[in-house]
Image 1 (spheres, rainbow, N blue to C red):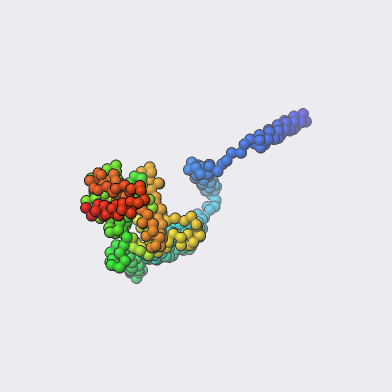
Image 2: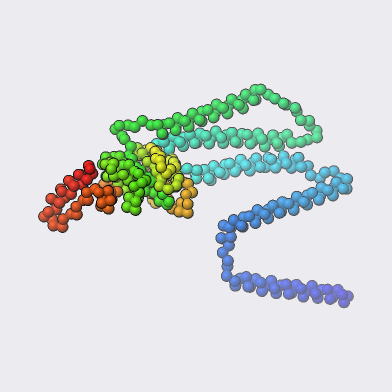
Length: 403
């Protein structure tokens, strides 16, 4: 009796102490400042630990099942788990989950594939892309239903003997000829689309606007042609602190070229991009216009496209008043790669002409002195002589441009 009473007293004492400790811990936790665990879920280490914990759990369950099977085998009992049926059921489960995953990817991530095309050739590329995606999706779904379905239906059974089916010429012809025809159609579509983009014939009544884009670590330089409509020549040997692009001013067509901080292009007008690089290979990327080409030191890369949607129209279409077209560098070119982007504005032809008239020429007084070109005179202060000064300045500029 004394032992029983003592044991009960010990249990009550332990329970009382535990309750007091729990109350103290709860009060301390309530008074302690809350820790923001949001950053923990953003850590790679957290997900690695979760993955290792899941693997450990699976290993423990597997070992427990293995011990169960060995104990039944040692006792001479029949196998407790029919693993063929388990594997077949898992095949069926993963088929359902996989097909749902395909549906989820299309509905959730499908809109993230490509933004709306805003160029003529971009629409053709999207048509080709969508056709390829539809065909490959159908093939993917059908083949996986057959693969996983056969694994479930024809799982091992002691009551059934496998049928020996070594060869069938008809099936061989079908799965050889059909993919060959489909791939031939897709390749021809790609070839014709490529030719329509890179081998188009210029319309004399609608000649493209030339724009030169020069890449360097880590910025872009945009040069427009002047009134002559032709971008002048460059020579890397002429690159200096003042002539950063190495423009050759012996070429008269380079003297009226203009620089811009953004790319402004008129809607419905073909644009001819001339892409170059000063240092390493960069990748000029305009996702909305379906343009992506490398800029390579020592050579020019040419691409022509026609924008079809203005910036304001795209803002309305996307219901985003802050929407902007951008072009980026799509090749990791160094520590400042992330900063290589420029705004592209698509406007009407009237807005384009107004904007272009406001841009400054690349050729300035410092470059004129460097290349021994006439320097434009400073305008006179008096209003009386302003008209005469303006006319003389215009004549001087014309003479400088034509030398």
